[in-house]
Length: 198
Ligand SMILES: Nc1nc2c(ncn2[C@@H]2O[C@H](COP(=O)(O)OP(=O)(O)OP(=O)(O)O)[C@@H](O)[C@H]2O)c(=O)[nH]1
Ligand SMILES: [Mg+2]
Image (cartoon, rainbow, N blue to C red; front, top):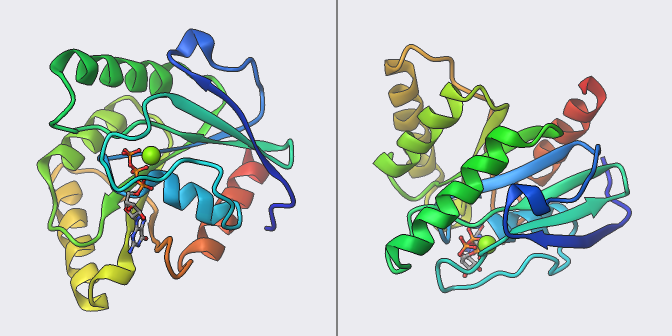
């Protein structure tokens, strides 16, 4: 699949303010700084649509981008950013949970995981919650340019073993690098396939 045009639509502070749209939506979630905004930009062809920052906790609202007026990409704030106040953290959590459980046109949630690390409890907890909510999802192991391929594979295997221990099937797994653009064709093909099945 090729994206011919991608544009910023709107930022929403809560579910009620999200655009009234029936276009299938693909959302990007994961720990703060995992590379959600960078991956979104990489997918739409390198345009700096979503704001990227070295400071964690950069994305604070639900940001909507439209691709070819056919589907949407949604950049969400990260979870687990220790430096924000508890109140702000709770607000983020509520905003994310409300969106992920209440959005009718949500086609898939991409759960981003930093491929440099062994499984982190916060990612496992989030994924378990998402699975219990039965939200459609896929995993994306990000920043693969930053470690040796063997290390990336080891970390993915460890993560999958944790999921198996819950008695759950492993979701679809992708790897990506916003730097080298690796993973882009696979992710776009998956999106195209999901759009066709929707
Ligand atoms: N080398 C490398 N750096 C990356 C990659 N993806 C993101 N980064 C860097 O990681 C930092 C965070 O990227 P963002 O895309 O802003 O991360 P985010 O998950 O949107 O962060 P928040 O909005 O704060 O939750 C930036 O400095 C990016 O340049 C990648 O694939 N490879
Ligand atoms: Mg971001």
